[in-house]
Image 1 (tube, rainbow, N blue to C red):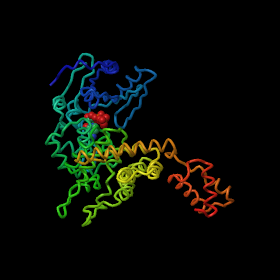
Image 2 (image 1 turned 45 degrees about the vertical axis):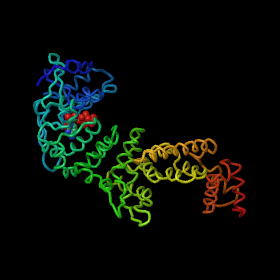
Image 3 (image 1 turned 180 degrees about the vertical axis):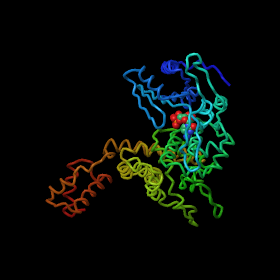
Image 4 (image 1 turned 120 degrees about the vertical axis):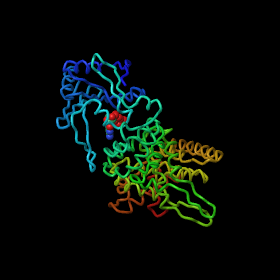
Length: 467
Ligand code: CTP
C-alpha cells in the first residue's frame, strides 16, 4: 500500500532527495527514524536506503553539506556515514540477505527496496519514506507497521522463526522495544522467541548487555524483564535472576517471591531516578537471597547476610556478562552490600553513631542508597509501608543534621598517617593504621568532634595507653 505522508518536512532529507535525483537513484529514509517520527520520539540517527550505490549518494550529500559534514566510507560493507552537527546519516544500498545457521553475519547481495524491507526485524522498523522530489513523503508500509504502531504490537514482517533464527539478537530487540515503547509482543512473535531461545548463545555478551541496558533504561523495566522470563531467555542469559523465582512453603509459612519483589523495586527506582547503575543495583539487591535462604523453626524463612553474599556475587556476574569491571561495578557492589542498613536503622533506636557510620560508608552515594531503600519497601500492608516511609524521613532528617554538624560524607580523618608518625616519632608500621582507625571510630561514635585539634589531643591520649 502506498500512502502520501506529507508531514515529513526536513531540510536535510530534501537535500538528500535532490542529490539522489541528480544521480538518478531512488532513495528512502527507513527504519528507526521513521518509526520514531510516528511515535514522536525524535531521533538523530537517519538511515537512508538507496536502490543502487549508497556510497556515491553519501559523497554527494557530504559535498553539498559543506565543511561541517564529515564523511566516512566503509567500502567492504558498501556503506557510508555522514556526520553533520548532531545528525548521523547512514547510507546503504538496498540489499537482500541470507543467513547461515551458525552465524549472525549474513551473505549480502544487492536487492530491491522490497527485499530490503523484507529482511528487517519488525513491521514498525520496516517503514520507508521516499525522498526523491516527485514522490517526496510517500510512505511504503508493506507489512502494516503503522497499524501495529497504533495497536502497540511488536511483530516480525516475515515468518518469525526465520527472522529470529537469522539473527537471534532480534529476540532481545523485540523485548527491548516492547519495554521501551510499552508495546506487547504479537502471539506468534512471542512463541517464536520461546522456540528459538537457545539460539541466543551465538550472540556476543556485549550485544546482549546493550539490549539489557536499554530495557533497564526504559520507563518501566519490569515489562522487558518479565518478557525475558516468560520467553525463557532470562534463564539462559542471567540464571542468577531466574533463581529468584518462586515461593517455598513450610509449615504453612511462605516467603515473598523474590523475583516479583525485585522487579517491583526496579520499577520503583526507575520512577525516581534515571541512573542506570542505581537501577542495576535494584535488580541485583537481593541476588544473594537464594544462596542464603534457610528455614528456622522459630523464625521461619531467613536470608541471613544475603546483602553480603549478593555483593560478593557481583564481580562474577559482571565478568560472565562481559560488563566492565570498573567503578560502576564497585558502586553496585556497595549499594547491594549496604541496602539493608537504613532499614535496620529504623527498626532500632536511631543513634547518632549508627547514622554517622552509614554516612561514612555510603559517602556521596547516600542519596542513591536512600532511593533504593525506599524502593525496597514493597509490602502489601499499606500501614506498614507508610510507617516505614515516615521513619525513613526521620533518618534522612537526622542525616542532614549530623552531616551539617560533623561533615561525615567525605570524611578523611583530620590527623593523617604522616602527622601521626611525625608526632609520635614512629616509622611506618601497623600501629599507625590502628591509631588512625581509633581516631575515625571516636569521631563516628561522637566521642570527639571531627576537628584537627581534638583528634590530635585524642591521639596523644590513646597513645599514652589511655584507650
Ligand atoms: N535492524 C534489523 N535487525 C537488527 C538490527 C537492526 O532488522 N538486528 C534494522 C531495523 O530495521 C532497524 C534498523 O535496522 O530499524 C536500524 O537499526 P538500529 O539503528 O540498530 O536500531 P533502531 O531501530 O534505529 O533503534 P535504536 O536506535 O533504538 O537501537
